[in-house]
Length: 293
Image 1 (cartoon, one colour):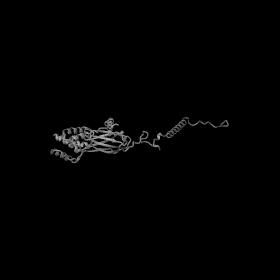
Image 2 (cartoon, one colour):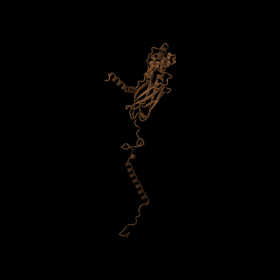
Image 3 (cartoon, one colour):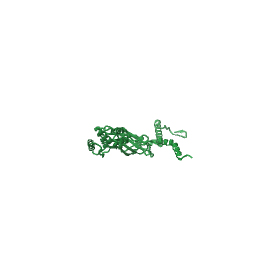
Image 4 (cartoon, helix red, strand yellow):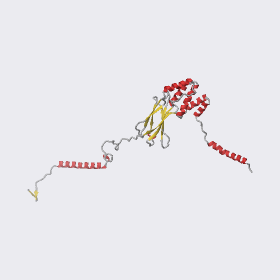
């Protein structure tokens, strides 16, 4: 009789390939770059944390919350290596995203003063986004939306993006472009974006120079269906129309009556013309019973 210990060992040995296959199929959770940078910062690896945060900043797709943390940490780290201008620029962007921020406790006194100076200059007003829509929207024509951003630090390159959302779960239509020198952009939405709907959920966003979202606004864009101008078989609205709403020239009875009138008039004119050419008839003396009187 085999030992129970030996049986269990053999069973475990036979199960190893299956367990290994399950472990290989299980996806390994990837740590986000911003979490890696935060871990380096917490461990005191400041130079490595600075490189990692700079890399995160250059990567598109960051959320406003992530960008806020990145700029705040970059302000601290740049200042710690003597890059005061870089620290100022980072604090300006952080306060543009959230004007209610307080200075990090780890800042030295000089950078504390810089932070409070920037916050006081901004006056509690951060980045804002204004989207101007036309009052009447014809979904069969192009729609122009004017996007304007205010409160961004001077010299910061911004971009704008508009994404449509549909109730059927289909992929959104995305339109984006860089801001003009005046800080705005006009985005044109083609008729194909409506897809037969009468309203669109739009997400308008302000982007930084790397394509990450600094600020977003979500709202509906409702179409006011503008009917095309009325036309009568290409003749416009001029001239009388019959009861069916079309032109009387399209009715067969009009042409029948017109033909009868024209034929009758032509016959009358012909008869009058013949009578005037032959003159009155020549009547001789009456003859009675074959005798001339």
